[in-house]
Amino acid sequence: MIIAVDGPAASGKGTIARALAAHYDLPYLDTGLLYRAVGTNVVRGGGDPADPDAALAGCAFDDLLLRDAALRSEQAGAAASIVSAHPAVRAALIERQRDFAARPGGAILDGRDIGTVIAPHADAKLFVRASPTVRAQRRHAEMLTMGQSVSVDTLLAEIRDRDRRDCTRDAAPLVQAPDADLLDTSFLSIDAAVQRAIALVDARTAVRT
Image 1 (tube, rainbow, N blue to C red):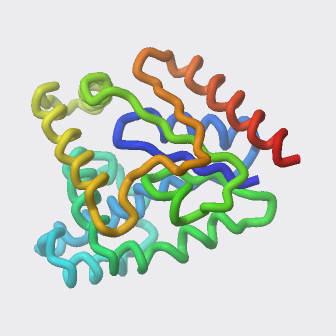
Image 2: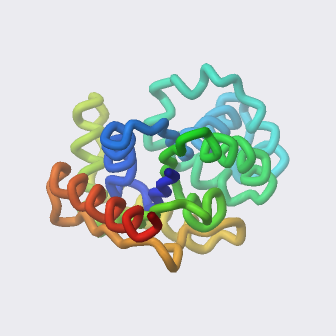
């Protein structure tokens, strides 16, 4: 069984995807980490994430980088949004993601284009969203636990800017697949969102079987 979980930053898709992986006992891939690794690799090398050549070169990162806590920073997220707009970068990472999705028994992947590009044949697809304000507040709370202090207004501006880039890029823009179930987490607790996600996946897979 393949489950695709898409949605904008801080919508809760990662939390939901990890919970689904535990519930269904399936391997999980946060594909956003791949792009965060590329962006971070570029920045650390003194390059510009907006430069297509530098971004493509940044795809040659060591897998150990995926364990770097710095990839969870707001800076890494912003760099990821920029490099992910380059078609060559997406092409360089696409097979890696598809190979993961093709694992025997299935897998769960979350990102921006899983249900539309990486695994359009997924057994269940979720498009997770929340209002920009709620997402900024969540991100702010998360950063405080990490000892980072950024204003909610600053985070809100960054989220809206990232949404604009993700939704308007030419290469695999963020969009809800026609056959994806919408899950708005704006006013849901984590437990409620997870239970709703499980119900949606069960309904989809029951139909397919």
